[in-house]
Length: 467
Ligand code: ARG
Image: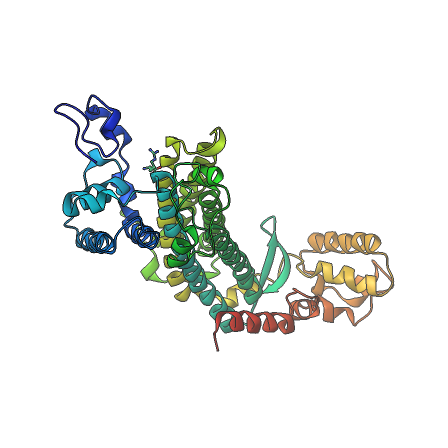
């Protein structure tokens, strides 16, 4: 590759250009400000590609050695912060390749044989994202370990379960906590699937049609720990499904964190007063000296907008694109990077917050004493005495109305009073009207009885390797 005549383009791709690029265009098209994040993968990909070119006799062994040494040096300098990135070289691929050519000469100029930036960028992005999948999985495990530890600690303590944010039925605190464990376990499984699906090497698809040079895609794939190679070169050049799937998984994680945050905000309010978020994870008010604000969950909740926004950005980006590569696709990186940073930092801090969270068990138990929280149990009691459920529902509704009038709870009524609503009610009714009785009667699979929840905690501990 030779520089153009005076006044011509000095780009690696400048052969057919008589004039240099306008400065405004260089600024507008550059992605190096953000895609420098991919340098490690770009260098690893280039080394594997060069090794394959050498196996195929396209590079000599001394050329390969020069390339590998040059790339290692460049990698070290980037790592150390001493490498100068040039916006006029557009992106990470060109910045590294141009520097290599400048350092080692003609051997460096052979590196791009049988490769295009289209398959190169897909490779770098996939290698980056599969690593992020693994890191996010570890962060999810951190949050789930905190949930399971809390569930074990609070096993047997009871709180109101809510629907419509109205007290509904009593549940174990541990059951509520394990609901989040399940949500995050699904997120983990989605990330695992996503990693597996994306782990096919795109390298060798070249610009869009494959290459006439005698390459060995499988060799490169194996060297870079891919499970195999992609099938269709045109699909590969324009495929960003893997990035969309990844970001969609991130959006789901952030939504789960956001729902949890909403509960933490509510529960730490004086109105609920169910939890105490450690001082370390709260902030004060600049004007109101008494305030202790739950800023961490609020910020996590707030950040869900960014991650959902990233997903929307990617979906819209790809929507109208014809096959194969289009420069629009360069816009895929910033939203993904932002999703990675947001989800990773949110998961990490949520785990820490949970590790320091205290439940006010007395206050939570107290909240189960009002609100006719065992009304369904009374209906079920009647069902077991052969009253059709709809009829039982009506009977209990009338009893609740009676209590409201009287200003008491169901269990405050005498058997005689209860019998006014149904002759099937007997003194054994008080067992089902007690909160503990209600909780422990829910032995159905996935239910909130102590027995079922203890098993669930044990299962979760096993999965997370907690002994
Ligand atoms: N910086 C580009 C991107 O991120 C790399 C691929 C450029 N390919 C091209 N044909 N201009 O998408």
